[in-house]
Length: 455
Image 1: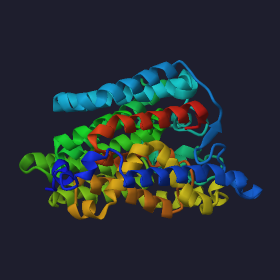
Image 2: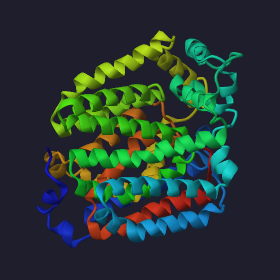
Image 3: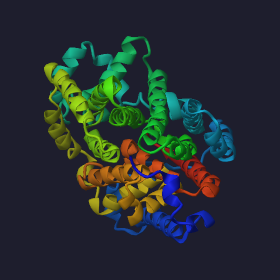
Image 4: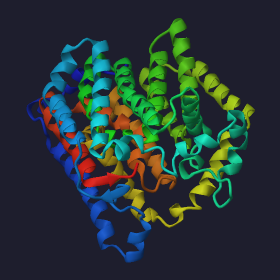
């Protein structure tokens, strides 16, 4: 297993004396410069270029409009509580209670932020718009029929084309909301509850993964940052938060399978394959979660879990294929559909780098500084678990960016990858935790109060 975080940091005494180093300042300034450039560039570029960005609050997909709501006070109180009590509680609570407390706090934080925009606009009405999943649910009379005809309805400009979000994702997303409706949990409010609950549970999955691959002490360091992530702005309510939660639990199960033996390893490995196999039927881009899965195996230095996970994942692919949906066909049609819309006009010369400014708003300054620390050569050579996990998340984002299939809106689209950057906050010195938590809270509060986010 890798060298523990505390042991590794003892070799650099300067990091114990200075809670914000010169390197941290460089990382913070670089992140700030990136964000400022992404905001300013559309204001000074050519008119046609500015129009074709198709974002009214670049680099975020939303519209400027200062506002507040009855969630404002609650969000501020949650933030203050985590800043004041999060770090000490993360070290004192039992491990199991730490996991549940982190997930519960993330839930309170996410719901409070959503309520800044109001019950309808911020929560219950998010997934019922004409371009969203629930608009198609009433038309699905047969699940097997839906799967069989799914690919034929992906392309635009035909009478029975799926709505924007349904066409842009594999059928697992629509299937989820259809099943919720079938069991009596139909409508926007229940769909939002499902998305937020699964999304916030990702905090527990990341804690388990980090503890398995490093140790509980290291995992406890990231707990307050997982509870107070700025990504909660889009977790409540974007279906990408749901995808993030599913993928995170698939990785957690893989970490368990790679760090244990016997029957438990087999069960966890098969479970990981089933969960990650289903994940790629929620979002085509989640094939890139494989980058993080590889990092897990490299850190654990055990690869037997592949023998259990891969066949299970292929079984999921086979089940969907048996009911008429072949993943590769859907993917190629989605690429064609993508360029039937505004993606043809959106300039990669802007979004190719501004995407990372968008993602920065979802991970916050603490993650940016943590990643800066993770990029130090000695840490990479040391193969510290949190370093490799964070860099794997970053690599997945880079690959997604270079595909040119995520021009804009990545503050939500990249949540399944960007959330792993938060594990790098374990590298921040303990005395600085409250300072960086305040930065995380301010990021989310400013975004949610200054921008009417669309998703």
